[in-house]
Length: 296
Image (cartoon, rainbow, N blue to C red; front, top):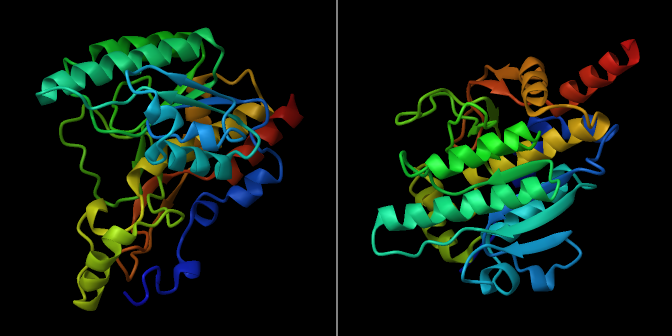
């Protein structure tokens, strides 16, 4: 098929680096010394040993940690871009076994809680998670683990999780759909990632473009999207914590919110950013942190 990987004006599109002003932040911090665990699956750890500081399995499928490459590997590659000097831990704690949604959610809750507790016991600083929402009351086990993590100073950036102690990232959308949640997200981030493309989805995407239609969801585009908000936010948190290891999860949240900005312009294309509040500004957050340290 012609133009399989063509994205018109792709180099002019917004990226993590432009929206979140990462180059400014990277001039002062690359996340050195910070340990970040990615709770996911499909890490391909056997073929990417230099990428991970450690790889730990919490499921009955170690092949999802070592042999198969997919969502988890993309999370790790994205995190490496944001915090190049951090240490990445592949925590294989996602599986979707069970005959009903409730059985699958219960299993995922147990695995997620086990990974959080392991991270606490092994001195990790930050955890990411980028899979579907676990509904209450099935999420109770996870919530209790998040509370234990927060008490130890471990920060979580889980998507689809409105626990008050979780630093909740959300896509840069002007009208967020938070129905079913108890509060608004904490911060907004760019949710388009063009670094991984799916040829199997490209034909449908191209047909929609030829008809002048806009994608309606992440299933209509041949690249990843919302999942990236968790590792991107985690990496930015690592930039701050590397400069001041004493920062608590609450302090990091407050500093990022104070330094955030609002996008006010409406874009012309479906992939353009639209009006959006609380957009993370890594460069501003790092600069303010350094100014505070100089005044001490």
